Each structure stands twice: as C-alpha cells, then as structure tokens.
Image (cartoon, rainbow, N blue to C red):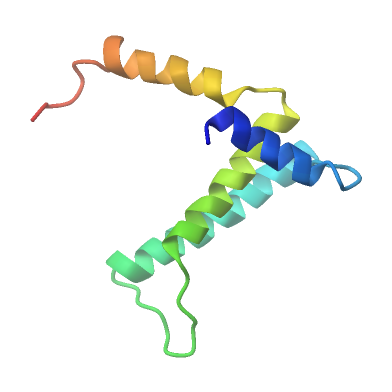
Length: 105
C-alpha cells in the first residue's frame, strides 16, 4: 500500500464522522500526545526510566502507527498529498543538499 492509498483509507474512515477532521490545533495537540506516548515507550525500552510493575507494556509499532495516523489526518485536512511530498523529500536526500551530509558505509 502506498501513501496515497493510506491517505484515502484514513479519509474514508474519518469521513463517517461530523466533522471528519478535528480543528488544526486539536490535531497538533493530538500529535503531541501521540508523540509523547511514543517517547515514553522508547524511554521505557531503551532509556533509564523503566516501566512500573503495574504498567502494561505497549507495542512500539502501535505507537508509531498512532503518530502516522495523526500525521495523515493533518495532511488530509490540509489537502497535502504525502506521496508527492515524500518523493520530493527523498530526491533532496538522494541527489540534493543532503547527498553528502552523512558519512557513507
């Protein structure tokens, strides 16, 4: 599934609600909340702050998917085609300004 198909899948799902997308600042707040949950999971897995015994483990993949879903909602509500944006960004990485930025293997 490519990004255009994923964006359509999200749009189809949210279109059953009224309004389909939250206001822009609520979307941003939701993204920050989801990013915080992802951050906490990474900290629990790899950092010095481990989960308490009573806390249930979360799945890193699910946290990443929650962040991605929210980003797609923001893109959709702003009419942004992430497939096109991704392609342009990767061209910059491969052939543009970032091509020589990092040490290669």
